Structures are given as structure tokens and as C-alpha cells.
Amino acid sequence: MGGLGILSYKTVAPQAYAAASEVADTTLAPILNPGSLPDSIQLITQHERCQEIFSGNKEALLGSLNPEQAKAVVEASSKLGRVWLTTIPFQPSLRLTDFEVAAALQLRTLTGEREAHCTRCGEANFFGHPEVCLERKFWRAARHGAKRIIGQALASTPGTRARLEPLGHQTSRRNDIQTITLLGSQATGLANAEYDLTVISLASKDARATSLPNQDTDPSRVTNKYLDSVADLTVRHRPRSNLPFHPIVFSLGGMMNGSTTKVFASWKRVMTRGTYNLMLKRLSLCLLQARVRSFEL
Image (tube, rainbow, N blue to C red; front, side):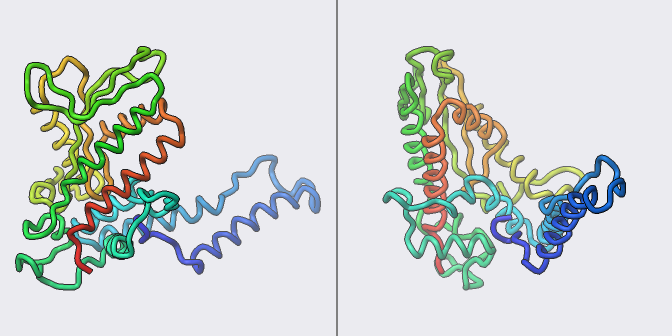
């Protein structure tokens, strides 16, 4: 839950003791008192015991938040939304400034900015307003950074050539990335394709207006519905091309839509583990740095 779901040791300790006692009793019973227990018994692990408590806490937390804050929790618990926390800054591209770390932690804990009204435009400073305020630094450069990171990772795959912004077929419009397999898809595991990246903010007017039928307010499903709508719009307005097309849609907090998740899963199968994990770390940092660029502590 983005750092808000860590259970207290006072909650975990009794569950750990109960799980350990159950295992110990099951192990020692045949030795100390043969025949006292059935041949097979279903043990409840510490993880299973704590998971039930965690699920209850998650429902209670999401129920107490407004829609923007609930979406922020879902974003922060996504893969790209949390991997920066465990990234070791062994090279300059993986380093964050003190300001970026402080702003990111404020966002993860739903603190937001201090002022009730934006100091730039004067409007109500709701959670996520810095991302959509027209008077602040623009964050949409994140798309170009993400495009380069993905292009470099794809280009490192043996037998694959990745081109950024290739010319379209009989048009001046361009998609962001094109992959060409030099050895064939069976040899590389990666087919010829074109990809177009879109980075959006869940604080935008369209995102906040997205809703589900039957008064369903689940933040994960609401977010996925909006991301899918952006992907569908990208497909409808894509430049003409002879290659298969895949939209890639991220939120600033790291959420992906379903089709983007499938694309990343296909890349994971063909990239080396180190290349894929480094790509995720760099993408996570890229999105985070773009998001906090307009933030004020």
C-alpha cells in the first residue's frame, strides 16, 4: 500500500508466535505423544495470518481516503511506483537528490503540500494539484526520458535493432519506438513492432471524472479504466504503419494499463534479468523525478 500498510510489530508478534507454536506442536507431537494428531494437518503460516490483517487494514485505509488519495496508494504499490525505494544508487542515473526523496516520501504518505491554496495559481491545493497546475514546471518531459530508457534496453537485446521516432509510412507523424529483429522473431523472441508512449497524471480533469457503473469506487479498477481509455485513444490516432502497434501508458505514479503490462512481460522474457531490472529502476526514477519537479515542500 505504498508504505502505509506496514504492520506494527505488536500486531505481527502474536501471529508469528502462533504460527511457530503450531509448527512446533505438529513436529513434536509424534515424538512425545504418538497418535495424538492426524496424519495430515493444515498449518497456517505467519504470512497467511498477517495477510488477513493486512487485507482488513487495506480496506479500512482506502475507505477513509478521498478518491485522489486512494488512487495515490494504488500507484505507490505498483511495481514502477515502489521499485525506486530499493534501488541502490551505484551510478549517477540511479541517484536522487534530497529534495526528490523528501517530496516522494510526502507523496507516498499522502501528506501533500503545506499550503491550502496553490502559491502559483491560487486554486485549492488538492492532492495531486502540483501535477496539473499550469503555473508550475512541466513534467511531460518524462515521456522522452522513458522513451530513451526503453529504447536502450531493447537495443541491448541480441539480434534486435531499436529506433526512436522512426518516420511513419506515408506520413510525417512518428511513433516513439520501433523494434526490428535482425535474426527473426523465433531467434530473438521479439517481433517487429512499433510502440507509442503516453504518461498521464491521475490528478487530471479527465482522470478525476472517470467512474465505474453500479457505484463501484475501487481505485485500482477506476485507474485501469482511465489508463485503458488513454490507450484506446492512442490506438485510434496512431500514425499509419505496416508493423504491429502497441500503446504504452504509464501514470506518473507508475501504474500501467493491462496491455502495457503484457508488453513488459514479453520484454522480460527476451531481455537478460539485469537489463530488465535496470530498465524498471531507471523508469521508476524517471517518473518520480518528473512528478516531484513541480512539488513544493
